[in-house]
Image (tube, rainbow, N blue to C red; front, side, top):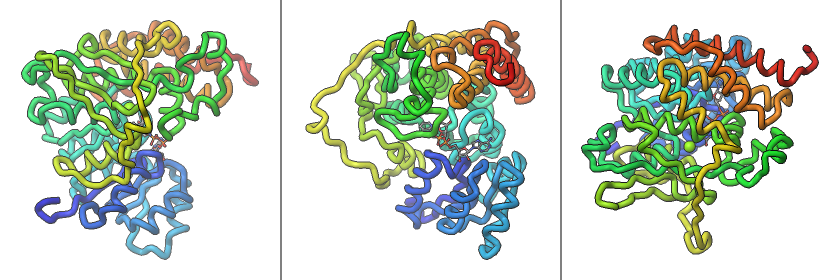
Length: 401
Ligand code: NAD
Ligand code: MG
């Protein structure tokens, strides 16, 4: 940093797509960033490699058996201690030894450690959108109370953040903002007919046209649930409502989102589709550092396209907006049902077009309650998963039926 102190990091979800991109930015700036802790779920081989390169003080495997395997694989690295389980994740997210936490675990599993980092007042680089979607008000209240510095890593939200005055990020009327234009790639099946949508395979869904990402978010991009989660994420981050946000399908994924002001000015953030740009932006903020992303070549691109999202073929965007409007535990129920449905699709037991069906049925079956503490939110999450599992079996009776 400008004052010469290196930022000390915990990377939650270090072996994932965002985690590895984060570590690539660290690798480019060893004088600015130091790694204190790395965490992963089960991938011991990748974690061992990362421990050898980055020499963290602590490595956490969420899975106990994986932690034992890692410990025996790195007995020669005396300086690296191995922890396990959710307690280990929370420990390295909140420790006084770090000032910055990259929250890049996928799904609800990231909620407790991400909230721990927020409560400890860290600079929290938020990639794990599901954590904020599930806990909305609770999460933002914790940010205010602890003085944590919340910086969005999701490319759209990072773009919006860059297009807003830094002191008015949660006061859009005060900033003179008319609306947010949230861009979406539309995913790989943007032009598929309803009939074609029933036939798509997990391999096709995981091959995103513009971004290389983890499996879960790739499927979410294909169903447009990713944009639904991002709509909710934007409402919390920028203290606004869905009627001030308009989704624009922009298949090139070069404009990462836009902000329209009352005087008619529209500010956009553009760049090659490379997550190292928003990651480096959050890590170095308010400074700028090289991220490794390619320079933008507009001549090669030639033109941009825009279209409205089709919520008939892709109902997930509408389901997410409705869940946000209902409030309470509804977004946590939406998220949990989606996680179960996506896992079932990836396992080959649920058809792609039935993902929104599972979510809609779960949302109408489960009673929405107040989302005032993490226990209530996690209880809604468990209840929704149980219900969704039942709905999945009814729709797609597999070998168990
Ligand atoms: P990924 O699947 O590539 O990686 C997930 C990471 O989380 C891995 O390190 C894995 O070990 C860890 N993890 C998984 N389950 C866990 C559990 N139960 N307990 C502890 N750790 C667990 O996912 P990703 O694509 O890197 O996405 C991470 C988050 O960032 C997601 O919330 C995603 O929506 C968000 N995000 C990703 C991208 C992207 O380009 N990949 C862009 C924007 C936002
Ligand atoms: Mg995004």
